[in-house]
Length: 197
Image (cartoon, rainbow, N blue to C red; front, side):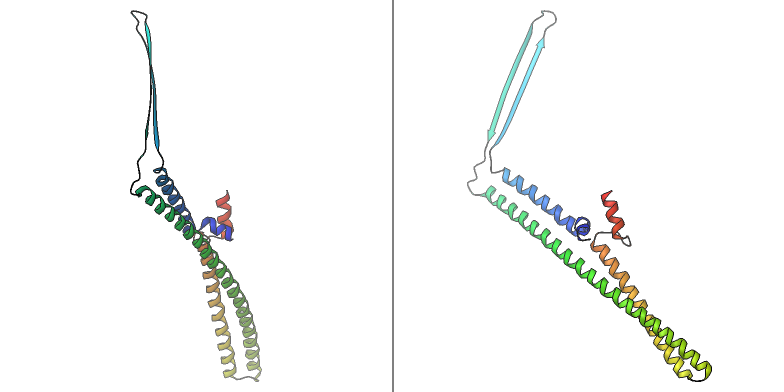
């Protein structure tokens, strides 16, 4: 799940793109510290039809240039680009760690809410059984209408808790999908199969 998230999360992808841009910028500014060489080679051959004479000429040329960095401008630009690259790498690492921590927290929250949902479901089932027992007792005259009303109230509260925990579990799953870079409502396993295939 974490590796899927690292490969799919938009924030992580943006941070990695920023690193590539910073590396390219650093390479360009670093190149300005070295001399440049331009070379040119040309060859011409011609033949005159009337005289049958042919001639050939060849020209070679090379130009080298170097800018003296008297005031340290190129060195400063290179240093600034290097610092930008390092900052981008740090930001990407921080983004990865934050995403992993958020994903781990979301998974723990989902496990907790699933556990609470199971307990709420058991409580609701127990309250439903109690309500049925009290209703039967009232039918034979051993329980009052107040007892039935009380049992119904406990059942409705338990039912509301189940609905609340179901909502929380759905929200937890959506949060995990979002952190993993999945489209809304799409299961993580299906998304990982599509990204591999």
